[in-house]
Image 1: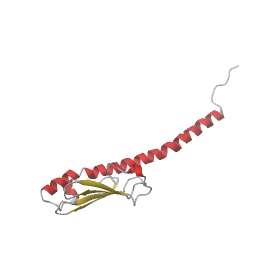
Image 2: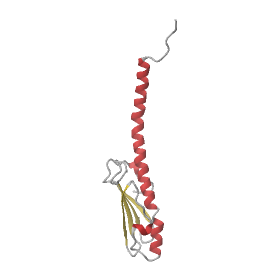
Image 3: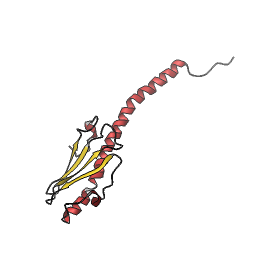
Image 4: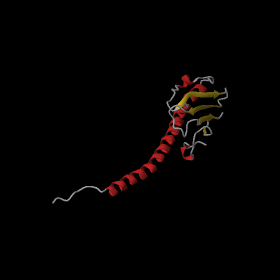
Length: 142
């Protein structure tokens, strides 16, 4: 007589329960990771334009457009880059997350401000975001 080999129903139920618990922990962590990286990506895209802004300002051009800076709309932003610079060199670049951005960060506005002395600061307005968490904030921004 041959002994039957295999898993019992209770063993299979335990494995399914363990997988369910692991998934319940992993999915929210993954969604937070995606939201955080999207905010950092948008910040990086806008930060890359600072060099072009500096070049235009050094040439005495304060009335430049997004195309003059080489801006290309991203799939995680609303597509519009807000540019506001004065002849003194003070001004700002701003972009709003939207498009394919995670619901938790969609509506967030990232603004890079330039002072007259040439220093740049970052400001993140998360008031339009769905469910903003402090961990989404890029380093060096407030």
